[in-house]
Amino acid sequence: MLRIWWDKLFGPKTANHAEALLPTVEAVGEVTPVPAPVEAPPVSAEPVIAIRAGVLATMFKDFHSHRATDRGNEETGWLLLGRRDGRGATIEAALPPGEFRDAGMAHVNMNSTAQSVAMRLLKRAHSHLDVLGVAHTHPGRMCRPSQGDYQGDSQWVPYLVQKEGIFAIGVWGMEKNNLNSLPDKANMEQDDDAEVRGDANRLNTIHEDGRAQFHWYALAAGDQWYRHQALQTVEGDDLAATILGHWPVIEQYAGSIDRLIRMQGHLELNLLPLGNGDAPALLMRQPLPRPGEELQVVLQGREVVFFRMVQGEPEEIEAPAERLDSAFYEVMSRLTRGSRKEQQVWS
Amino acid sequence: MDFRPMDSEERRRLLDALRGNATGETSIKMDPKTTTFAGTGTMDADTPRGENQVIDAIKSVPCHYAGI
Image (cartoon, rainbow over all chains, first blue to last red; front, side):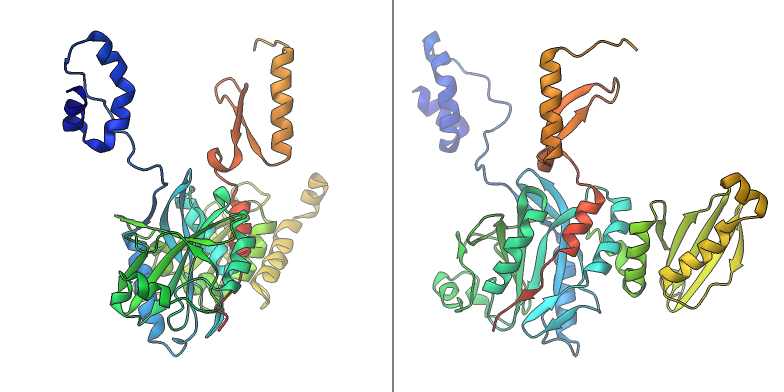
């Protein structure tokens, strides 16, 4: 009688949880209603991996655009950023591979220098962001990670939070009925595939938009095989969308900016707002020794302009036509040399 | 501030925390109000990673080969 009451109230899935409370009720000897638990017990202990709808939209849009370019037969990819919560995670941003990526029909090496500069910019607004994994495309019907992928990914995942990565393989033009047909999925395996385990037929291990598909996997440090990974889609924009308009100038100067940031602890990098018809621009700010003074560098297209700001007033400075970081140090050397009196004080 | 030497148990916990932190396994927690030692945490789960660790992870992304 009591068991029937519990099953009616909470359903068979919660019967085990209810069982833990039964002795107390039975000891009373009456079938009196017991206050309902405040929280239902978890249905599954499996960590939830989610992706923002905006990120998925970015990846599909990029993939479609990429296929329409003259590099459309090359592989392409995305760096996946987001938040780890225990073993769960939410993908909140995707960074593109960059125009300066090294790619061919069977490989892609993304422009990680540009991605690292973009990450520094993103972390100023979203300090929690971390690297969660990588999505990349494969030719033909190769919707599983390859042995080559495994060799690289298995050495890379120890760098990640929880030492576990989320991976996606994008493929183009596969038949829709492959999505829900296990025999077809088995047939999709190629000789060079890495080993994958788990249930490929769970919902959301594959996302599809037109001719583009992404197949999701997970790999942890020490794993001998990838796992099919289900991803829940959650509402939310792609956090990287705010900087994608500036991507060309980020990528153009990424090498110099990266070197400067590593050496200049107080160097600040900002996006300049996109104006009407203006090319995207970046602003670098470096405090100078004298109070109220700083060096500012505006990067816009091929143009690099140095300013010394004194109490908020800009003074343009002639800079040598060298690589950005070399020109930066040449200008800094001039600005920090100071007067003879200052040299005596500073020494 | 009321200064008081650590007792032997506190000293042992702090030394364990420092050793764990040196090997990169644990973080050292501090009470922000009193700046006293507040135990240890798991580095991966509890502590946001430093920016340089994140950048290192990005720069270490391997080339992906389809192997056809």
